[in-house]
Length: 357
Image 1: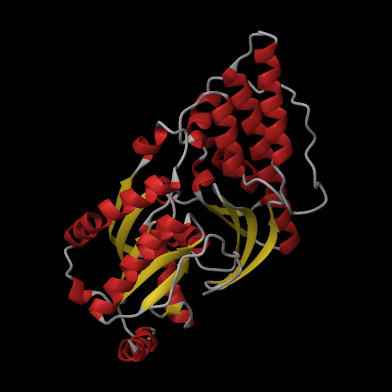
Image 2 (image 1 turned 60 degrees about the vertical axis):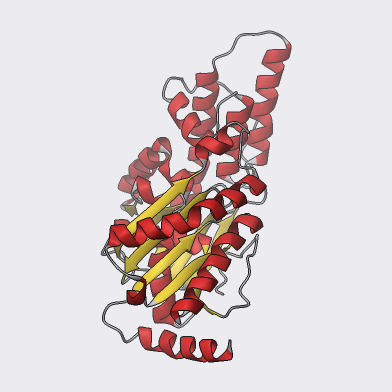
């Protein structure tokens, strides 16, 4: 083991001087088993994703034990498909990168242990990547010329935060949620409306059929900060729906979805643009699964045009969990000389956005 670690360290340090760096990346933080081959942080040779949406749909959400079991069943096949699609062999791999947190511990462990085994067998460096940093890295795949500094609006099922990206591996949290994330709020409102998993896309779809005409018993909190709070809004929507159902009063689910979505996106857009102005940032990047929400993207384009802020939206295929985004940011870890892990690497359910491994 010591021989491997010494050799891996030397190879890791040499990679920053290599013209072309090919990274095999692994992502298994939730219910997507994904492996990608990414060159120099920007060129995706392959990005294979095995999704479990249909499996978890009948449960109304992700069941951790089921997710872990299916990662084990799928991951070897996903590797074979990724190598074939990229037309490369294992002996061409310069490093293996893997999401070690944040996420479901059991699901993460499948990817971490697989990546450790692969890195050890190939005698190449193992790079431990933060899932959140990966979502930021997705934008480097969609926008080849994008470079820090910029402000990032991170919106996903696990995180809602404003991150000042000072350099590729220098992150400062400007504001974050004090309770529920925006994605979590979308999922819970979808559930109370009887919509299937995943809730966020179904809210987005239903909202297009409704009108913004419902006034929930809710006032946006934390107006004078860059922090977010969505638990009060979630509770207000749930109470509205339950009260209507208990009284046998008719209401439009589409109107509920639309009115709810307008409040969430207003909160996200208003604070994000205000943060851009205060920090003097002229570039805004969006990251995370909620970044696929059509109304959020539409509003941000309007806000940014008005305030003369350049907006970078990730391609929809890179909004949700995927290994290509992990391979992208791993390359910049290499250039910064951070993230090298040994074979004691394990999964972490929570990771601070600003922290590096």
